[in-house]
Length: 197
Ligand code: UP5
Ligand code: MG
Image (cartoon, rainbow, N blue to C red; front, side, top):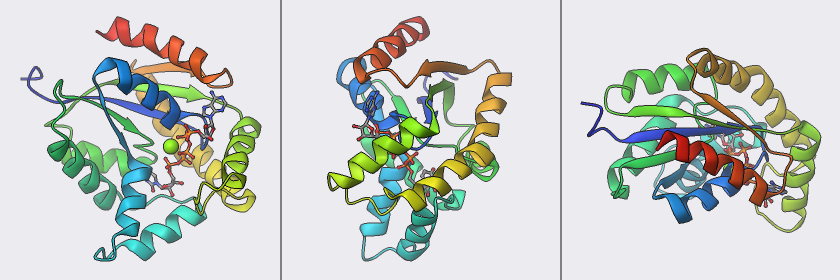
């Protein structure tokens, strides 16, 4: 039954909207395990034993999306090994396109219950400024530069927004104003988490 299945909230929004930041705030208080698809891909890229390192790097620096088989198996493995005491997961930055959605539905949907999508809405201008600032401070991310950021944003509009629309039609999307300061964003998200129970 759905009772024993892991519960998932997807966290979506543009590159730099504040997905990772809000997730960090949520986990401290709400007993979720945070899984960032991007972080898992960057870890896999850094593993010298991985056959996918170059493929992942070319997608990340071009702002395009890694084939779902890779991302989904990283998410699946992380869910299995993380031992979430409450069996609740925040999946940050996934699913980002139709391929991701189809792969998730095929590989995962029987075993996982999707409670909703937290959508952090934020303008391209704000997102870009934040990521450039983070890059200038030495984030080490190969995609925190203007050229990659333009491509990341294009991919977000073309590929990810339709996925958010898909979940919106299912009545699963909760939208937040990501232009606010991190505490205000978190406060709004908390109200929704309390409603979801
Ligand atoms: N900041 C955050 N919130 C703020 C706020 N409210 N006010 C002011 N500043 C705020 O924040 C970004 C920066 O802004 C930080 O410096 C932060 O302090 C500040 P962060 O919380 O990191 O935002 P986030 O939305 O998580 O930004 P991120 O850069 O991680 O977004 P992306 O979606 O671009 O990155 P991700 O890691 O998810 O993906 C990277 C790439 O991996 C993708 O482009 C793609 O190539 C690949 N990928 C896949 O192929 N498949 C996947 O499933 C996932 C990723
Ligand atoms: Mg992030």
